[in-house]
Length: 161
Image 1 (spheres, helix red, strand yellow):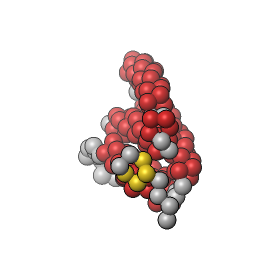
Image 2 (spheres, one colour):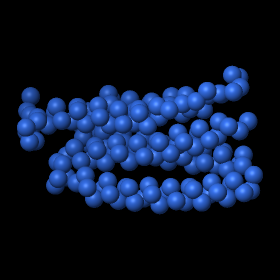
Image 3 (cartoon, one colour):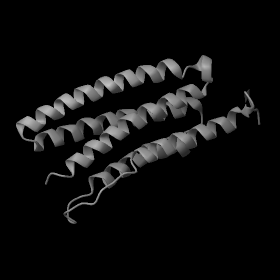
């Protein structure tokens, strides 16, 4: 086995540590959950987490090379973006005009925050500073931000029949 040393840590060990850390960040982002008043209503958060688990498994177990992991994060982010759009649209449809306007303003501001945070992530986790693990970190951080917003919107949506 060939091992590339990065600092005091072998590349393979560092990659596994980054994968574990990324999964912990992603898992903790969805940790808060609240009870559902109607036991017959679908649990939107559980359904979302089950759909997300497929992508998270690809990242943690199925992908082996750095390129495969980066591709898995890219697919996961596309999935999360689609979930964000779907959840936002469903919530907006449930709201009266005044709260819908406030939600639209909130979402615009959140998108500006997301874009600024993505610029920070992309500018800070560079290959020059972090080696090949930078791409893994960028994917994990970007996905955790979007997943957290989807979870928040799902929590809001759960308040409406």
